[in-house]
Each structure stands twice: as structure tokens, then as C-alpha cells.
Length: 117
Image (tube, rainbow, N blue to C red; front, top):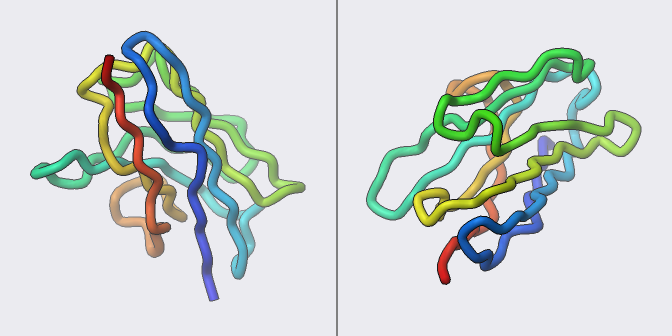
């Protein structure tokens, strides 16, 4: 079955960086568009960024553009999210999904990112 396992979350200071990973299995990862989304406490799930199957094209929500970078390694069936210049408002549970929007068919369990001094 489809499995998406996020890791790499933790506590970061404002202005700091974190790199999230998403290990995928049970489906054709190299043929799948992928996304990251996040959910802050008390808020709805919001789409963060997406990437095409070959990694050639990436898409970002305005609130993370120029700070976050999505990438993938199809040989390792792994999706990444490099997060730089973190802000307290980036605090959320981050999920990876198999699709280019919130309509992705599957989402992982999430990894917590907390930005605080």
C-alpha cells in the first residue's frame, strides 16, 4: 500500500533552516507529482509547494516563495523540502502527498516544525 513517511522536523529559531524528507513506497514515485502541505494549530490544511514527476518544474505558494525549495531523488523515492529563513508563522505539521494540490490521493502522518526563539 502507499506509504509516505515524513521526517526532519524539529525546533528552529527564526531565520534558521530545516530540511524535511519524505520516504515514499508502494506506488510509482518516479511517475508521480508530489506536494508538501502544512497545517498550523487551529487552521486548515494549506498547500505549500509541488513538483513534477521528473523534478523539472516546481510550484510554490506565495508565502514560501524564495524561502523554501522542493526537490526529489527518484532513485531513492524520496521527496525533500529545504526551508530557509524560517518564521514563527511557519510553525505547523508538514505533510507530503502524491499530487500537485490538496486533492492528493494520499498524505503521510506529518512531521512537526516549530519556529521559536
